[in-house]
Length: 317
Ligand SMILES: Nc1ncnc2c1ncn2[C@@H]1O[C@H](COP(=O)(O)OP(=O)(O)OP(=O)(O)O)[C@@H](O)[C@H]1O
Image (tube, rainbow, N blue to C red):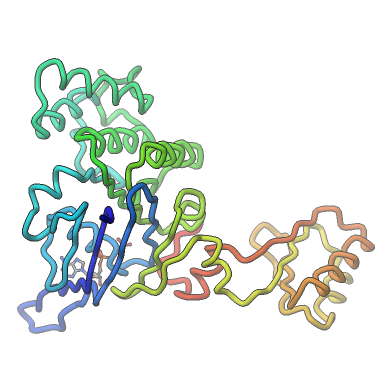
C-alpha cells in the first residue's frame, strides 16, 4: 500500500454568474507517494498545488478521479483519512493569536479526542520537541514567523499522523528558521512519516525531498529525484567567477563552445559551456588572468524549473 495514491484526479471550479469559463485546476493527475517518502510538489502560482492538498485533506471534493491516503478514499472515507493526516499551512492561518502556544495545542489535541493526562503529556512533548517550551505560556501573536511555523508543525503532529501535508511551510521565514524547519522535516522522515510538501522554493525542494513532482496548469509534468530533474536542462556546464577583467570577459565570449556569458545579480560572471573540455579552457583563461574567485556548477533543480516552466510565479531564495 502506498501512503498517497491519486488517480485521474480532476477538479474544476464552477462557472461564475456572469457565465465566465470554468477553471480546470487539476486535469487527470496521477501521483503515488510511498510510505516514508518526502515528496515535493513544485509549480508556479495557480498550478493546482493547494487544490490537490485540499482534496487530500478532505476539505474539497474532486470533480472526478480518486485520492487515497493509506488506502482510504478521501471522498468516501473522509473520517479515516483525517485520522491519518496532519496538515501544516504557511503563514498565520489557523493559529489563535490571543491564546498561548500551549492553549492552542491543547485545543487541537482535544479536537483529536485526547483529554486528561495523555493530552497534557502530548502537548508538553510537542512543545519541547519543537523548541517552544520556553515560550509555551506566551501569546502566539508575540511569536516570530519561525516560531509560528513550528507551532503549526506541532499542530500537524498532535494527532500523531502517518502522513503530513505541508503547504508552503517556510514561506516568509528567515534562512535560519527555514533551515531549522527543514531539519525537522528530516526528523519526520527518520520517523517513517510520509511528507508531501508544496513549495515554490527550489533550494528547499532540493534540500529535503526524495522525489519532486513538477506541476503546471493542473497537470503533472514529471516526477524524479531533484538531481535527475536537474539533468533535463541542456547539459551545459557552468563556471562562476568574481572580479573578471573586462578584457578576459571579451575573450571568454569569443571562445568556441562558450554558450553564454552573463553577469549574475551578485556581480559575478556566469559562463555556460558546451562541454567539459571547454570548461577547462575557460578555467585556464580565468586563472591566467589572475581570477581567484572561481567555482563550477552543474544544472540544479532551479534551472530545471526555469527551463520547464519559465519564471511564472517563481520565488527565488
Ligand atoms: N475557490 C476557487 N474558485 C475558483 N477558482 C479557483 C478557486 N481556488 C483556486 N482556483 C483556481 O484554480 C487554479 C489552481 O489554484 P491553486 O490555489 O490550487 O494553485 P496553487 O498551485 O496552490 O497556487 P499558489 O502557489 O498561488 O498557492 C488557479 O487557476 C486558481 O485561480
